[in-house]
Image (cartoon, rainbow, N blue to C red):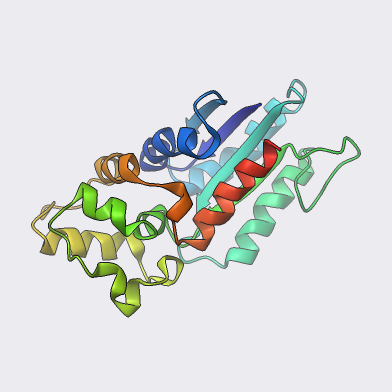
Length: 202
């Protein structure tokens, strides 16, 4: 099995390099293609999928990962599914006669940083000065419901004495993902992403 990831930014690539082996094991083949932001990925997605279609091996799965940001999640997912359908590739909601999924569309709600809030143990390991009771505060209990996860994480780290000049997203992704345990993550969107990958191996 080979996983081909299409992601919108370098921080996602950095996190996935640490997370994918933890989720599916060290022997699974995968490659991560990075685009210049969400708009760039969506703009180039039809052409990219069109390029895969003629030669896509039976044991390959394309995973498109986008941040929800402040978009409507249902509409964004529908847009991603429609692009795959128009390019003749099967998805879970639009299976083809070949009987397998070729493209899996997944959304981080509302941003990748929500997945970091989903593993406060990893956050504390990477940044020991953040509040010990962070996950006990009501506004951080549901990672996918945090308004502006990137900004929220930047505020928390800045108050703890980290990155007062701005959040280096790639470095934060690298440090936190090194300590993350996929099994304990409380972000629903991360759980869907994790479980979807595992199901494809069964």
